[in-house]
Image (tube, helix red, strand yellow):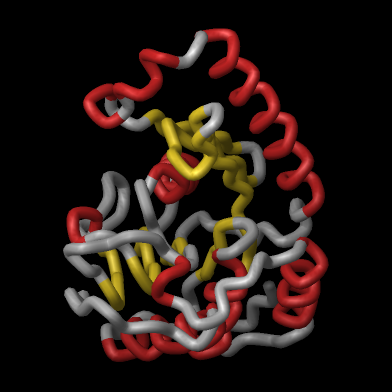
Length: 229
């Protein structure tokens, strides 16, 4: 795990390849499943999976943003197959919510749940079996860690062999393994973290069409263990 600041990745694909190099060196191989968190995590996961010659899938997540401050998450929800997960940021980190009407928070959760349902349905065919396998959960970076924790809550409901979280960048306070994961791989973990996007030259929005193309291309590629994405 690095603790370097001021470094940038060219794009998500380069970041995923770099993660793949680290995981390969640690003995992770193509028998694992690499799951990208929708949407920005999938380009990273696709490059990582290609480096490992591993199966690629997508996991639906939605951040629960504070009304008026959408980048500030008070939690997240996730879905994969028949499993659903939820994470709420501990109260000590969300004093801001005291100023938000309860009805507004419920509205955020309702809208997020509907969007999560849509995403899960759209990408349902890109959900490899996780039972008995090592799962690598991948995103383009962590800010609060809420979406990754919700994803872990989902994957922990399966009989996996091991769960590894792998992200290019995260605050130094988040580099330790998250609850439910046996290991956390972080390439850049600056103590003065400002945003995930600050560590990419190209951090343009990832469209659903781009994600679908990456997943379809990976599915057409046979892997060393005989699985297809």
